Amino acid sequence: MKKKIRFYNSINTKIVFVIVLLLVFALQLIGANFITQIERQLVANFQEDRQVQMNFLESTILPFLELESNGEDNEVDPIQEINSLLADFSGNGITELQVVNEDLVVIGTSDSTQQNIVGQLSDDMDVRQALLSESTVPRQVIDPVTSNRRWKVVEPVYSNQEDGQFLGAILMESNIETVYNQISQITWIFLQSSAVAIILSLVLANMVSRALTKPIKEMQIQTRQIADGDYSGTLKVYGEDELGQLASLINDLSDDVAEAQESIDAERRRLNSVLTHMTDGVVATDRRGKIIIINDMAQTMLNLSEEEATGENLLSVLDVEEDITLRTILEKQEDYLINATKKGVPIILRASFSLIQRESGFISGIVCVLHDVTEQERIDEERKQFVSNVSHELRTPLTSMRSYIEALADGAWEDPELAPRFLAVTQNETDRMIRMIQDLLHLSRIDSGKSNLDLEIVDMNEMVDHVLNRFEMVIHSAEYQGKNYQIKKDLLKDAIFVEVDPDRMIQVLDNIMNNAIKYSPDGGTITGRMKVDSDYVVISISDQGMGIPQADLHKIFSRFYRVDRARSRAMGGSGLGLAISKEVVEQHGGQIWAESTEGQGTTFYLSLPYVPFEEEDEWV
Image (cartoon, rainbow, N blue to C red; front, side):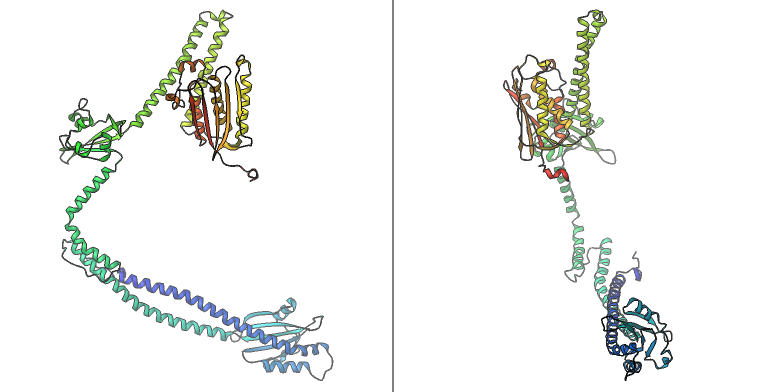
């Protein structure tokens, strides 16, 4: 049912209203600015004219005021001359002129009706203000009789002599109401012109609005016919504008509806596109388990083409015929792990199954989604290996401690030679477990993001030198008595400042130096070097030990990993030092790696980001 549109709701009315409203708003802004500027200009011109007249009158009266101020008898009566000048000067918009002497006594006026004030002391406050401020006092006043606006100027008069004696003042009042009458006339003319413009704009806006709304009304009728199933109508296209394009689109709508089947095919193609670009593999079968759809990712994961897979049994393609049956999938719909190859690399896939059912419950097919879980399985395996390593590393010292404690309990504590040695072993094993647990806690904090760095600007040259000096003292201690280790330095000549956490970085250097000493032969040399490479500071520590096999080189930063487990345990350590070092260096945005040759030694490298540090930066 067609709903009637009210007059004030129609587009035609809204367009007319908006156009007229914009015009009125524009006229308001233009009129306000125009009239304000006119008023300012006319008033300013009026005031300038009066000031010119005042200057002329002042120059004319000045000689007579000087005569009157001297008080000497002259052939010319200065007061009479002043009154004569005021009478001649009055008129032409000037309503009143007064002249007062230095004693503020009125000595002349242009108003014939107020001749009685001549000879009397002036009570005008503006005259007194002009005397006190020694400057002109201009202001606008209201005539108490006519209520007209007047422009009042009081000009003090001073002698031309060097002393500049005050001689009196001139008061001028002029009728400024005529200026405001002119402004009112201009405003009225502007309002009349605005009213005419608004009326014309109403007519024009109505014409424009009808030209716009006519095609819209025709479109409304045509779309209603299309909604009712009538596609035979054709809209008239009035032009190439937006409305013309819209009319053309509506004309095409009838043809588009007739091509509904083609739209369905387009939707199917879009669905195939979605399946093609999915990151998971998707395989769909019919009710017998024969593959009817397989996307590109599933083809890559299963290493077969669409032609090879279409029509084949899903279970045989997944190579799980011996483990599960189609009935098992229909009943349980469980996930299964499948071994496959992707581009020649072994991968693990999780196959998830779901049924395609109609509303009646009839099963018309199966959808299998394949997700690559190789990385997840690897992480899970590493977690299991980590737990196994921790258990093994803790069991060994605990077993040793238990054996020694049992021996002490059986009476060895009474032996003065055995008891201290057994207690020392127990204490060493306890310290070893404590260090391992501290390292594990440190790694846990790093993994959880709770290990924060306390960054400082540090001279890395000085820090490395400090660590090497400290280890030089260590190798000459009693612990290494009889061994001839040497430490060489190849550091930078100038200071190099890097933003690091000093404690963490010293911990990394200590770990590498400890390993270098442990695995260096008697008489071996450990060399510490530094260099600047582009935006990085590279620190290297080399030893002359037994080296690391190339097959194990990429694993040395793994937790609990040891190249030679038996020798590593004999030398102590938890197997976590290099793992912690790697995490700390990466926290600083750097890298750590190793290069090694079996039988010749190993070199560890630390690369830290470096920003040039100027001396004046210290004072910023």
